[in-house]
Image 1 (tube, rainbow, N blue to C red):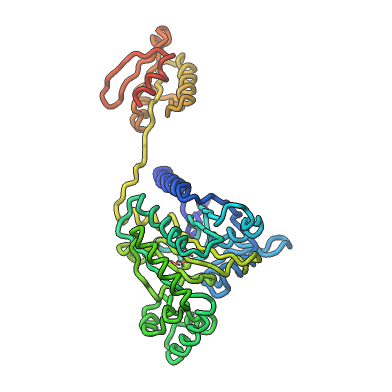
Image 2: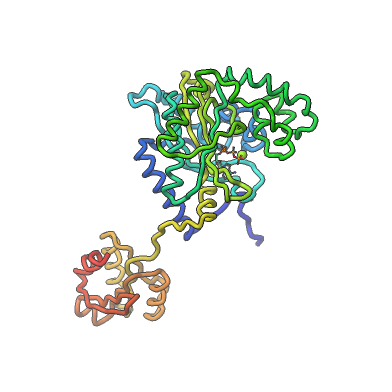
Length: 421
Ligand code: ATP
Ligand code: MG
């Protein structure tokens, strides 16, 4: 039979690597508790219409990256390409704006799906961790959201990261900038890439975000959105910077930074690592004051970010950060004679219930083979039970590293091992 291949752009996360994921998830949950963000779990698929409205018709995601299915006469559904739209749908649906604790501070962590060209750090199924703070327009919450992402990276051991920061203004600011931008870029329209020619008509700000080198040169002197901010937008931008400075988070203002998503207003940011090579953005986010109303809720301001665990792992690898991953178990119980097997089986159960990591043989190995197996699973102790041990009611415990042996009565095994931990 022919082997069945894993789908392109996906990966199996195997034992040995999954521990890294678990470690990151633990850190992330702990951090969110400290910053008072609560977890929300939304469906992996939603009505396609949610992403059309929530992510935006002119984004790469909606134009070319969605996995959609028509579901037996019940409409069109899409595997979620990102987390914000679903969280906001739920926020509106559950009327979270009405609960006493405000702003609403939520986080999520789960798989997202985009039909992309697979390459380093770019998958078709990837896991995003993100937070959303909805219900406050305070620039301090912008800085808090940025700090959640930065502190996670820092607490995991990454160094030298910096925040690229911009303000894309309000809808009104952007309308004024848009006119100037179109006027400036129209003369070079024909030299822009095909995507940008179409963006120029539909969402000209995104031309600034183009990854094509030639386009970047052509648009080098294009009018900056920062020159079109109202006084109020400017003040918001300055306040965010002051709060970031107050907590020691380094940032660089990048007037060309526009996030790929349509619903961003005011603050837009990315966290980058310079030495990562082709893909250098670890995290992206920003304010989305128009989104909640777009999804059918009351007009509530919001801000959030999303980062993928895949890119985080890439960054950790590039910086050679070793995460503290525990391997090995406490003890391996060795069956010296067939008659001792039930006793071993029962002892393993007692040890495990007491919180001790214990293993035994299920392959009928000889004693030597079992001791080898104990080595392989990095057991600290071998607990040997044979005929004489059964008679004495005590096991022979051998410390694998030193070879030191000690007789320990069965009913004291748990306490003896716990005392050594
Ligand atoms: P890019 O410009 O790299 O395509 P994006 O604008 O599509 O990024 P967002 O939608 O803002 O990215 O997603 C936030 C973060 O999720 C990114 O900064 C990146 O860390 C991660 N990410 C996005 N797409 C992928 C992917 N296909 N595989 C792995 N991680 C991804
Ligand atoms: Mg993308």
